[in-house]
Amino acid sequence: MLKSFFISSYILVAHLILIMSIHQLLTAGFNWYAFGLFISSAPVVLLFDGLMLTKSKARTDKSLSFFTLMIFIGFGFILFGNWVNDGFKAINLILESTVPIGWLLYLYWYSSFGNRRNSILKVGNKLPNLSLVDLSQNNFETNQLTGAPSILLFYRGNWCPLCMAQIKEIAADYQQLADRGVQVVMVSPQPQHYTQKLAKRFKAPLIFLQDLDNKAAKYLGICVENGLPLGMQMLGYDSDVPMPTLIITDANGNIVFTDLTNNYRVRPEPATFLRVLDQLRT
Image: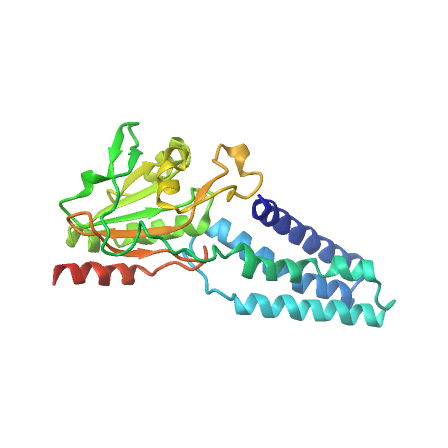
């Protein structure tokens, strides 16, 4: 619940600080303090708004070095502006530290899932039979996938821009996957109407399935309680979300590859699982 509240609040605060800094620069003219507020908050807004609006990036680097550098350069300007003007006040410094401290929390706490050791999804294990629901509201058992290699991607929902970009990447490479005889399965707990809307965007015959109440994700140990950003519940999404997880099975349903990323922004490139699939053919 804490992470859910944090991310929604942090993005909102960064937007408010950016608006306030622009207002100060336009009405009072240039000053180092307002300029620092602008430089420190703009990268946060640029990152999150850019991801949400374009939904074109399936991953970022772990450290987001450029954004981190700009945020702390901006904070340096804020401190300089305080020194030039009225000096430092403890209460002001706490408020002015919101963006850089929040950024560090975002990088090293919010983005991380910690240790994702998972005995069920070990390479070599047989994928357990999971009961899911297809777009026609029919039950779908994952043991139906035997007979050909399969990719299963557990994604968080249409609200997640990185998930949407990752699915788009896989759909773009579908012909390469089809040439290898691969079945591609997308699994999410989100309401059916969101999944149906998503499925219509792609011509590739991906198999979209619903994981009702996250039962499969919970069984596999890849579910995060209250992982949905606060406020998204009003759109009908479940508060619990799966951690982004990619599983590849062979024709017998045995797991040959899993990506259990410990950072939701770090995800495998399509070339990675294409290599795995090619190894199955040798």
